[in-house]
Length: 82
Image (cartoon, rainbow, N blue to C red; front, top):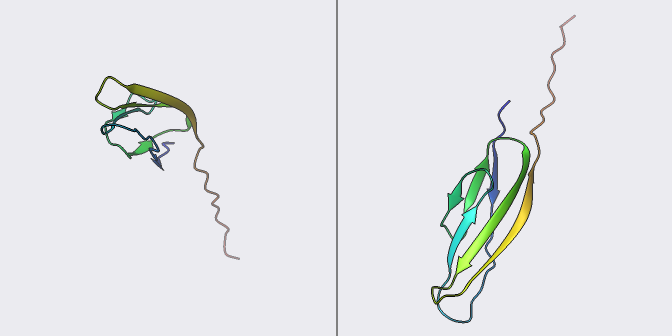
């Protein structure tokens, strides 16, 4: 069964000089250059998400966190009418 879970990532990066560019690696072979991206995971697993920010003046920094995607569970049943 395919899982589709949308995540809204918040970039809290700051700089004291210049403007920041962002590069996200979502840990499932997909990436984004959006500063505040959304991303859909298509199956349950754990993913190492990495954010790299660059101030354009030779300064860069990165951080990583593990994102856990749980399976979507839906209970359902039918009962015969008597």
